[in-house]
Image (tube, rainbow, N blue to C red; front, side, top):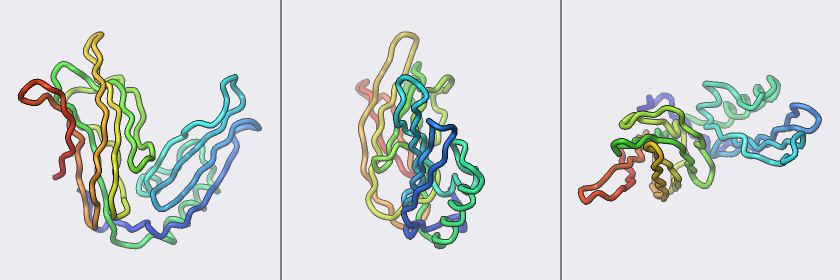
Length: 196
């Protein structure tokens, strides 16, 4: 659980945008708003060029780990100043993770959205059952939130697709929530949202 001293209210962060180029035909656009940092890239250097999802960061992740997608130093400093200037002590934090309790199946691919924004999209090369995978860790606005997911599990040549969504309220304080996949007493696969 996060320390209360690490809880910040980012609800007053103004919407701002930055853009930087990797080369003449490839650039990254960053939108900062009260929900976090969203990166959208554009690449016209390849045959199938166009816009693509470049990633999402929480404010806490950005301040701890720095920017992504080759963010220039001057952009990093401007974004950091904007965040620190407009954040306030307090608010709510969320730690969201996934755990599979389904025997003989391992996590293969995962796509998770929080409030319609992708927060995890990845192919997993190694993952053991009953090992927790962090999906989101950071500050979150108070109010109602929605998580939606598509999860692929694999066992040899067999695949299992799990999809769905949940809504949950956030007020103030620290929240630890787990997305848990398991086989129920009649053998059906279920996914539930558990909180600590």
